[in-house]
Structure formats: C-alpha cells, structure tokens
Image (tube, rainbow, N blue to C red; front, side, top):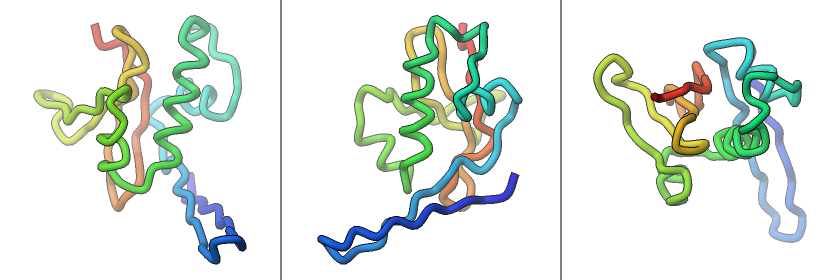
Length: 112
C-alpha cells in the first residue's frame, strides 16, 4: 500500500500540517476496520479499536503515543521485539512497528 499524506493548511495560524497515514497492515481484518468496514469478530471492541487506529494514524512520533496514559503504550519483547503496542482494552492490543516515522505492519491482537 503506497504512503499517503494529507496536507492541511491552517490559515489562521499560517501553518501546514502533514498527517501520516498508516503505511501497512499485517492482516486484512485490521485494514477493513481501519477503512470503516464492520468486522464481526471485533464487534464488541469496534468503537474503541477504531478510535485507537485513528490515534495511531494521527501521531507523528512515538512520544505522541507515550504522552497519552490511556494508550498504555509499550515496547514489546520476546518474539515481538521491535514492535510496540497500544491497548484497546485488557484483552486486545494494537501492535505495530515504527519505521521511518510511520506505523507499519499494524494488527489487532488478542494478547491473552
């Protein structure tokens, strides 16, 4: 999936805002949910998952994710070394890699 940038001009502040779009998804179901398609296995967490994907989609650095305690941002270890996660709830997380200041290989994972 090619990188897409949205450019927004704020004329009142005379600034340009670049919005990074999630670069890639590890599975098709996470991509479907990101695009607004209903995924039956995630109906119970749909709103929370969509919100977290929106947050991930809008950040420009990992520090942006760290600054929101409700994200429960973590650097993962073990077989997921090199990945990061933010929590949807106690059971579900969004796991991803951060490459060239972009979230890549994004997936929703049942972490239990």
